[in-house]
Image 1 (cartoon, helix red, strand yellow):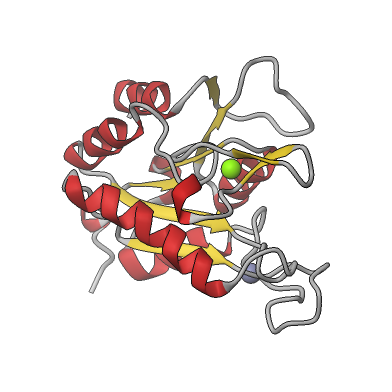
Image 2 (spheres, protein in one colour; image 1 turned 60 degrees about the horizontal axis):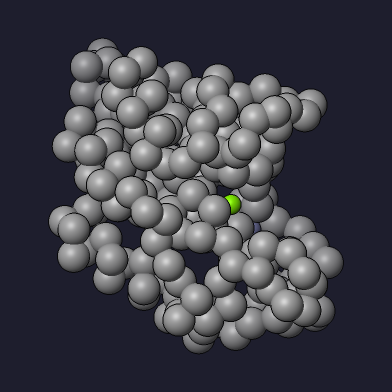
Length: 195
Ligand SMILES: [Mg+2]
Ligand SMILES: [Zn+2]
């Protein structure tokens, strides 16, 4: 049987921290990072509405997130799971369904636990996008990756998807996204406009 292109779906792949929820100031490092406790988890204003609109437009939603804090000895898997629970809680309340939540818990510079190693899934690797494409029959060229780091943009480009960087311009480095916008609401508007 021939391949039925019309059966292919489009997706939006979303980074989590700094896109869906706010990055949080870590007093130990002085940097804005992933939330360290469930209480730190706070949705970016407008992010839930933006995801609802993308879902309503027929895009499959996927989370693609690097969470190296357990591998680095900075958090427990229990806490990371609880933070994920806050995300799911908020999405569920608004009727937003993700097709998959892809987390990479690895980090090559970790402290010796089982996630402290090189892996194939850590962004900028396109591993999870390719996996989703195969499993859910996604047309990557018609799909988007949204993130707040250049590694997110690289990840999307390596997979052949279009990319949106959430940042205050100018934020250009060695890799150029298709667009730079200030937040997820603006990213959703752009995607719905450009298709
Ligand atoms: Mg991020
Ligand atoms: Zn990994």
